[in-house]
Image (cartoon, rainbow, N blue to C red; front, side, top):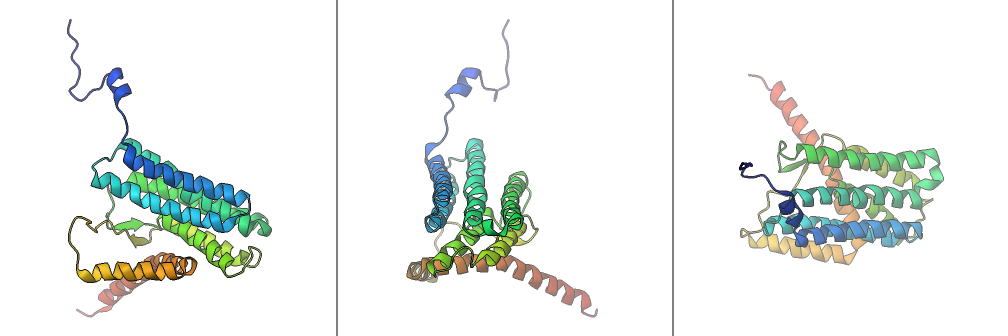
Length: 255
């Protein structure tokens, strides 16, 4: 008797033979390694290197999705692997780095602040994965975990570069860590940049702006990067307040 199976069904042999796309997953692995390396360096009290490693993880994480879309190599495996990598690089690593550098001296408040950040990153990633098909792709719901990680790592980097110890900056670190953790799970909207099409031509001024941006970052990486991500973190609140103010003016306007 002939056994019929659905057209899209896969046999066990076909499942075993199915591979994964190596190029985007190489970038994801590099991001995961950078996050793990940041944790190792924090354990060795080399916090400046830890902060730089988290920024490198951001670069690799930004590349893996772009490469997958440009080469048409998106996969369910890649999406899951990227999410797990993000939890290590932008959830666990920043929380541990900031705790070891500044929050440890605050006792219970210190590890509670670090846990708020870590839990916020986990919840942010879970919400992103479940809402990916229903939200406006032009905006993120809540502060993205890479930006939150850059905010925390940027504080560590810029403070160390200016001669501050973790003990001197512990209250600033505590406030910023909790701010980042709470903002990740908020409903504040942030521009995602996903509406930028790299395959289309852009005005010449855009290229000039990128050149100026690179020059500014290279002039003083710790301060400029921290300022950029702090501005991005505040931009969501500013945009929300502006929209709320506009709605109030519309309601108050006489007919």
